[in-house]
Length: 97
Image (cartoon, rainbow, N blue to C red; front, side, top):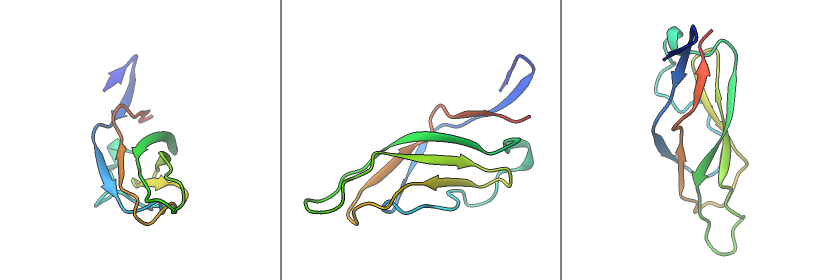
């Protein structure tokens, strides 16, 4: 998408992931060079998370980093082992130049 002469990458969709551990790359392959940010682009995103009684509290947000080498990392504190996680990338947008 281009706006006032700047090209942007815009994301949509979401996914599930296991428990609250950090994930180094949520993609199956690195993004093509044309879709990578010029510098790390970081965002706080919502996620749906629940924990069983007696476990650590569920954490309902996490950080996502779009890295220059084409990876996308999720960064979050660890949480309960029975957590059900779903996160959204909808509306995330960063400049390509």
